[in-house]
Length: 229
Image (cartoon, rainbow, N blue to C red; front, side, top):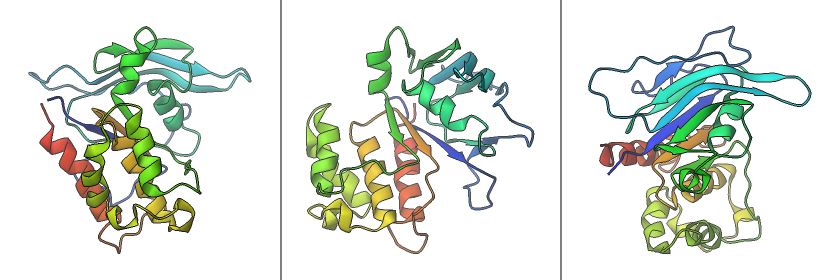
């Protein structure tokens, strides 16, 4: 089975990032400039392939400039850069939220424009902002995401792994910021995507709780390792 590929963004470098992450950043990156990643001999086809990608908004602001990027299956990849470098724009284009100006993108060999339905089923996204219905229960909001794709039975393990199972009947408005962040991760994982984007995943996730940063990394890294090709 093709590997889960977690892709993370951060505003700056941090010594807490696991050593297995591969970062790509230079201080003058604004807009996000061309990223050409070396690919070892014998590597499998990339699960994400970006070629000549540019994005210029109606205002004239150029967020991306000829980005070339390949991410391999089972890889954990960290994209680092200052505010406004274009990290979220790049993710939004790959996920089908923002239209590119030029260039091509494929997700698990599916073109995000020509074959957008198949491409989007391969992707899970944890956005920067917490976008959940505050009056819904944890179980209701996560099963809704899963229900769009099929059987919700898979969710119990996800919620247990993220230390949310005991809160499954709680309304989201009663939970801490860290728990809400983990709900977003559970929603993104609910349809068993092959690619997982985490846009600024660390804010509001406590490092002191078993379900905090360490527990969250265990879930993400565990899925990347167990499903690698």
